[in-house]
Length: 95
Image (cartoon, rainbow, N blue to C red; front, side):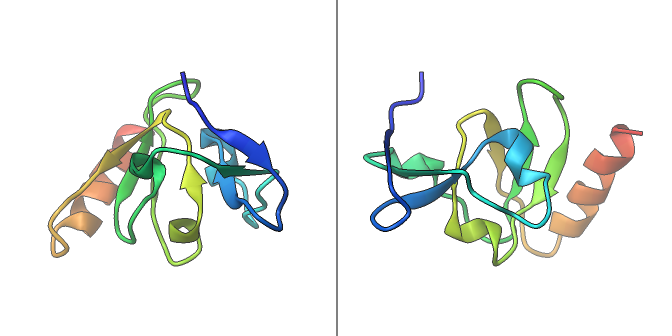
């Protein structure tokens, strides 16, 4: 289970559930501290849901990289020159 401490916007980092990562504009409803560093994401990482609507994917951009993302998202690191191809393929599979 995910172990985080919920807190206020003033002292916490914005937390997104898998569902929240697909809603635009991005609006964090929770703010957390005391989380594992592996919940952070990097720009151009591909996130894939592994619970709920499995297989949906999103590409981390400048906005998402500033959020703590749920552990129910698989983080996929791909070579920078291939990330677009892999992301397009994963979205093609969802059709």
